[in-house]
Length: 556
Image (cartoon, rainbow, N blue to C red; front, side):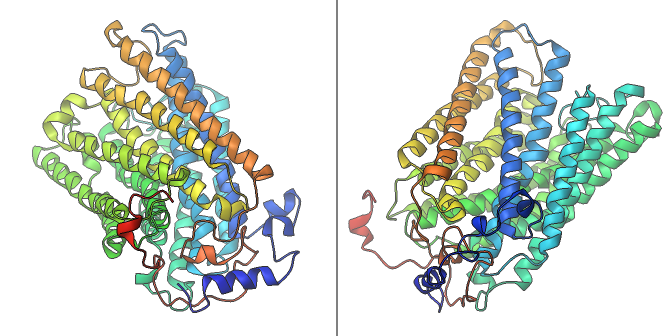
């Protein structure tokens, strides 16, 4: 990829001996060296640990209420059930899934893949992390304060409270408000870094597709997040001062809250999924040893998704009383956003065609992603169709679709990215057999959990109910069994990756034979990434030609 080749870069990295330059984890030890660092890699690791801790907590909450749903009569009771699914949703969305890939893997790899020493504003990067932590602490205070039972969307009138009941909600919306600033500052940092910090020779057409995805995500973060900040601030003010903004009893409009909330939250779906698309583009090319198919189409489709995502929020509100013309327009735009997503999917499948595929854990997660995310995308068409959405609205069909996109898309892509870049991030290799077992458990558990929920929703089972008609019990039992298998697969994955972190064999600088710049430094990278600034003269998917007719279908 570079005039200073990958092999030469790696050579420079290993020639300079040991000590501070060799391993940035061991260069400066101690907790304070981490808490005060401005190294983008360490900040990315801290985000990763924080977001995965949120994922663990929210996942345990989900297992608790899935166990309760195995019987039609709730043991938890309606109030506790409402609190559990509210916390599950709020933690999963605001603590985990929005920052997980951009702030964690994005922070770690964006400068490396650009050939830069760090992000444009390293101190602002650390400040973004502490703002996120501050928002998390405030959200935890709301949980401790008690009665947070509105659902993660904070819909009015559920979120209109009086007196002491309003306190947890005011604190929670304050926490979400603070977290929004972390998202905005990270987006600004990434945009400036991409514009100003690219290595010599790295034109826009030579940027890795993960960078294109992060760039499009950053644009959404900067433009959409302020709308959420204003919305939760208005909700906070309304509850604190009892001013009528959304509460009809005080002269407000509850539908206005939905417009504000979804104007942010539908683009936020792409804040969650676009970086996952970028990971799949990187992993599928490296592990099939083939140039990515349709590079420009994939890159520009990320930008197209970022633009169109601002125009589709009304499809959440087909039953809210909006005009027929508005509903038809939002339905059309919802179908339109599927086009750039389909371009990516077909390009990934075409990349696999006659590739020299490595049947490793990363590729297993890539194939899992293609299966689950395609189901998520196709079921979105049902919810974008006006007549069908009326039947499916607020049913388990929506729950299943949402999880096929978020869990089957973003989380599976995150797992693919963690396995793809684990050797680079930590300098250790994990056990491939353990990885494949974990992927199989996740695949089986996930599909058993959520595919049955499509059937529940199509038969009329409403979401967010602690108790239900016994006729639905069979599907609920299978869904809950699937959730336990999924939880076991994720726990298994956590255990073998932590084991590999401490006991795994050492990784070489380029174990997968990748051609992009992050593989041009040692594993883990030195503090400032590169000893010499790399010079780029070709694109990051430039693999040597192989006799694919002989190799296709072969086991690599």
